[in-house]
Length: 408
Image 1 (cartoon, rainbow, N blue to C red):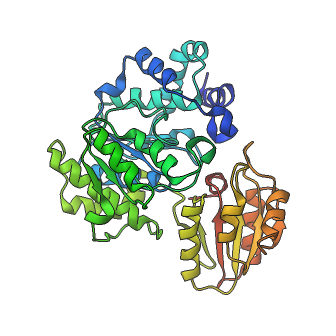
Image 2: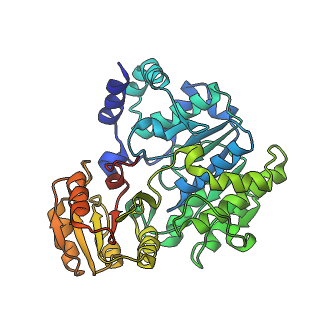
């Protein structure tokens, strides 16, 4: 199979949460243990940082990678989902895995994957571990897909674990209380391995403390330990908490002695995240007159901060292009959106995309008014045609809406 055929096979043959949602969720790690044993346990040859959290784990992963790259290390970065191309998920020093490596890996292991009903995510995790081990990276930054305890990445023993924050998302899998969700995320805390917590609440802090105690793990609350707000090229307001988690993680890493990262490299790493890693879709500016911003925030905690940041902007008229997936709790997120905007309702082009008419109808309950469009592209073009140079256009609601924009 060539690259496109290989990717199509991965997407179509096997459960993929990005497309199907609930049916792709696995209840234990049996499959992924089978997989890494089949691959001769490449993860055992990797030094890793493991990152979980409701929001900010992608930004945090990319910031850590950028700092370590600035410090001269060969850095593997595994994140999800991708925006444009599958290969964005697996990078070394900001460069995507080659099409050839993806094809060879799938073709070589295809019969094993089929015989053992491997999910899309399990295969991708195996691919990342094998690639990083073969390329002999100095360190690999591994982002959890969803949750933590039962996530396919949770077979590594990292140098340090990071939990960015806890909010309500994927509650059908992770539980519908902050304590239950924190328990799932805290599942990445390993015996004797330090853990950095980005943000906590009165509900989640005891869960983290209990899990760290049970595992004899040192626990560091970054919000209490880091006061400086380092400048960064990631300018979303929500990044302040992520930056503190990153700086504290580097401090823990430095204390272990294997990696040496200077203050100067922390600063240059945070200022060059986009250049070093290729991160996109985080309060990303696509135009100036009118100002156009897109962001992948898609749950209550993320959208709350983004909407507040929009209110700080100066504009004549606000235009919002919005689409969501069909398992989103609309009564939780729609009240966050401003009423004094013109809305362009669209559906991300995936099976999980919510029909535009349903979104429009639900939005009307919260006095959010606008028309429906047949695609993200149509909605975006219409918003640009309608806006004058002193207006402001925001595009978001889902990672998959942002994925359909011309980002560069």
